[in-house]
Length: 468
Image (cartoon, rainbow, N blue to C red):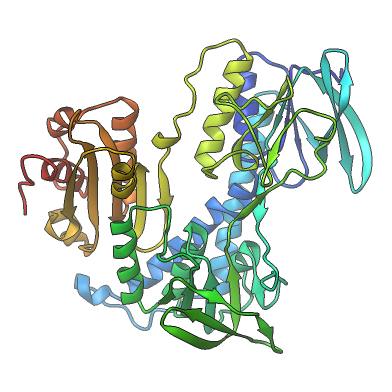
């Protein structure tokens, strides 16, 4: 087979493999270079396996509250090894599915690390190495860098795989820690905190910012804080975590906040304090590709400063989300093919947190909208007033909408409660389709559903919610 392709994709995560599949659909001859697992971190060690873990924990929690539904079962229990095995099985199944899709699409896959290796005429050369040895070179006029990111390491908080865990260790525990400290309260940290708390661990969360879930609307963040504390978590905000002192099978530290210092000893620590782009050993030296704080700079169509070189997903700009990476892959490939795709609108990308309760959002928060000079109309509707939520035994939650008072534009929507990660897409469609307040008020929502809170939250911003 010729070593010349129309497109080479380096990285087989949700950005890279989707880009390769779309390019194949558009008639390109595509090569995909992946060093570890098809599906990348998301499918193998992130999005998918963590949701399997969270589902097991959610079911176990429900079993402990069966009497609330008029049911009974004797002594619910769980087997940690089986929970982990199920999670790994789900990831393996989905990974094989991605490999099948690529094969079906006739994408040529290469096992190894891809690295830019100069040019050969109009084509970029990519060197492929395995176990430190070069296994070949391929060429293409277009190369997409989709190498993803990894967990950030801070001095004194480095993961060691035993006492101080990163995401991988947190997903595959041999034993359940009785006491757990989670450093960082973003999506990853809070999801792990939720999982371990549902299985009975004593969970402490330490966040350096003045509130948890800093990317979310402040009102939603505050409600989440209360909900997690109600579940028995201990949460410290504005917190500085002192040096981690390792013992034989425990870790001691001091957490300092405005309220004072707290001495803490736990069995395990999970560090979830941000990510770093995988830009090392990509052959960027000698190119016009620019890197800013470990992430590759691109334009609205994922083009870097070097003609023919593109970057998508977590190795590029935020938000660092799998669905953003996939959409970038499609936009990038369609632009390469000569089509006229719409640039990615960052504010139309939903954010989802799969803890219990779930949190989901799109667009501007109330505080950001006001900071940008908008005069806003805000609507809120509690799950407690929704029949389906009460019938499900899930009355805790809220839907919040933020509108431009002058134009009726939906500036943002924010939700907390059961299954809100499944519902936020309704607001995403509204923003993408540029629907106004009037059109949303005229939309008919099915009854009984929790999605009715979405309609009521729109009404609440204007003429008033009907059911509260």
